Image (spheres, each protein chain N blue to C red):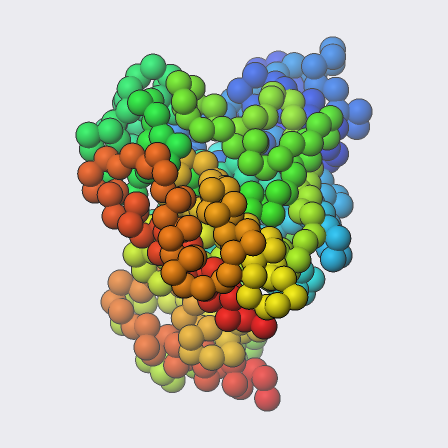
Amino acid sequence: MRDFSYLRADSVEAARNAAALPGAMLLAGGTTLVDLAKCGVAEPATVIDISHIAGLDAIDVGPDRAVIGALAKMSHVADHPQVKSHFPAVSEALWQAASAQLRNMATIGGNLMQRTRCPYFRDPQNFPACNKRAPGSGCSAIGGVTRGHAVLGTSEACIATYPGDLAIALVAFEAEVDLGERKLKVEDFFLAPGATAEQEHDIRPGEVITAIEIPGSAAARRSTYLKVRDRQSYEFAAASAAVGLELEGDGRTIRDIRVALGGVATKPWRARAVEEALKGKPLDEATVRKASELAMAGAVDHGANHYKIALAPRVIARAILELGETA
Amino acid sequence: MTSQTHAGQTIIDPPEDGHFRNGSTNQPSPTTLSLHLTINGETHALDVEPRVTLLDALRERLHLTGTKKGCDQGQCGACTVHVDGERVLACLTLAAQVEGRSITTIEGLADEDGTLHAVQAAFLEQDAFQCGYCTPGQIMSAVACIREGHAGSDEEIREYMAGNLCRCGAYPHIVAAVRQAARELRS
């Protein structure tokens, strides 16, 4: 790991100013930054430690909305009783991510800045070509081993999968990220690679995530996160779905439904076509399975990841149907 | 963290107004940090480069080698320690980051008279290891797992201990040890 200078910010304003320094990177939990510095992917000139800023870890949850401070730990949010009752999919996405130790370190703001786990991106010594690391250098994954790579939102520049879980639930429930001067939808905060794979987030030098806000809704209260993976625990998603459901008074007609996908796309992926196809329809297996197929419109595989196109609609359908069976 | 002078340049904590760009403070360069770390109740002073992890500081500088280096990439859990009572990975924690926090390693778990912690005793009784390399991390993780209230069933123990890998495959005995210690600590 290349050495860097270290500064500790004791306020958000200090962090903003320091973040504008050339080559500066913010350190919160460190689970991404320190890891990528060891891989030789991140080479910060200055590390700005924001983990000591007081008060930025507050968790304030009610039925109408949740405001979660950027430095709140994943584990604390996952175990928060009101997050569990008002936003169960958020809690489930968090506790199914990483390990208990990593969840005690990683923060909510840092989680949104998590980088892809594409093995080519993480290995600059053996694979110099990576448009995410070195714009214009090419993509080593295309034509390589692609079992974990994305089938939605890809481009000729990049097919790296967005690896996170939390943001899938945030996109489903239309959460916003607070950057101080501006707020934007989490869905818009993440950028598909297009021709600029190196740009993963709509964040500018000197901006610091201070909080995320999630609006409450009936669908958020009746929600779940289903994560299917190669091993049962401590693994990234092969395909995952955050789903929220609100039924009409008859108990079977869908009034509102939210569907977002993880493990299959280059960014947290809202499946609006599935939602639109199901609103006003009865909650029965045939209808749900047919609608779930719509999530894969436009999917492009690269060989070994072909299975995701068949897997993801089944994950969506199972999540919706299991949610329908809960009271 | 104290101020350090390096090649004529002063490295300082962020000024109170936070204005790095305007005037007094130049872009800092890598230099040595003088840290005070509280480990197992004792304060240790050490000078480290900013990039030094807590794991390397513990093992190479303070000779607390009970905390193990397995993957050094946050994947195996062998380096698990407690910071302010919560389990974390020392390999992905910068030493500079935990100044002012209370750190507990496997060396700090037993009583001063040598009486083992209930989890240590349970690991011995259940033969919850073979080669022993992952064991300090397993034990630190298990202590926290029980304290968090995530040791209510074998299924829950397996889920919440998933961040600690054992290449010898002693998992069934590890689960038995955590189950036993959780029962003892509850009563």
